[in-house]
Amino acid sequence: MEFLLVLCFLLGANSYTFVEYEMGLTEFPPVPSNSLKVNVSMNAITYLGPNIMFNCAHLSEFVAKNNLIHDVDPLAFNGTVISALYMTNNKLTTVPTLRVIADTLEFLGLIGNQIDDLTALRDLTKLVKVFLGRNMVSTVDPNVFDKLIHLENIYLTMNRITTLNWATSLTPPVTFNFNLKGNPVLEYCTCYLLHILQSLHSKVNIVGTCMNPSGNEISTGDFVAAAVCSATEYSQKDPE
Ligand SMILES: *[C@@H]1O[C@H](CO)[C@@H](O)[C@H](O)[C@H]1NC(C)=O
Ligand SMILES: *[C@@H]1O[C@H](CO)[C@@H](O)[C@H](O)[C@H]1NC(C)=O
Image 1 (spheres, rainbow, N blue to C red):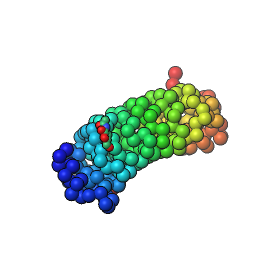
Image 2 (cartoon, protein in one colour; image 1 turned 90 degrees about the vertical axis):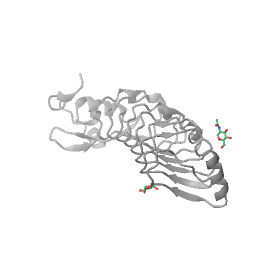
Image 3 (cartoon, helix red, strand yellow; image 1 turned 120 degrees about the vertical axis):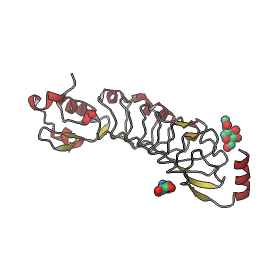
Image 4 (cartoon, protein in one colour; image 1 turned 180 degrees about the vertical axis):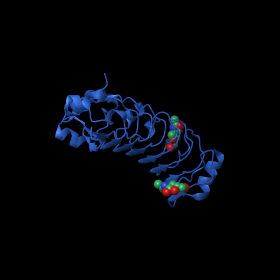
């Protein structure tokens, strides 16, 4: 901590910097207090502790792709005004608690982790886009989205979602798109899928593709529009 303070003092706060690191770091490095953007991608950092950038009052973008981060302290980003945070390809198993930046966070990128718990999204009321592709999400709690009134898109591509029953319990109006491409629930264009997409149609936009009996990938939108469902052809792969 002393070293951090000295460094910030030496660098002064009269100019904004863009900090980029790629140095085999295993721990988060001291960051100049005037940083606007920090990028520590391609290192081996495992943990983000409390107040690691507490004096970076103008920091608005944080990028830590391709590290080994499995834990983020709830106070890690305290003192910053981060609006875009990207931790693609790390070892996270839940969406981290980011309440300290809830007033500013608009873009959250957590692609390629091992996340199966989205609960912490609940507090992030300024979110516009959330990227959660290539994780391990199998169920979605519909209440998580109640206060996310600015949300435009949530990408849950290539996760493990097998049912859309949760979507029927979303609190309307749902003005954002759910991208569920590459999840088991959308794999085949079954009657079950058609019926549930039809029932959700006016409520929430589920984006993705499914495979029809001819082996063609068609978009969920086209599938619903065509509304073709021959029980004998389509029902074979329905869940029981
Ligand atoms: C972050 O740094 C990595 C490597 O150090 C670089 O490849 C990448 O383009 C940077 N990303 C952003 C968003 O600045
Ligand atoms: C959060 O950071 C501020 C400085 O930006 C500091 O004064 C405060 O003590 C920190 N909060 C906690 C709980 O550590």
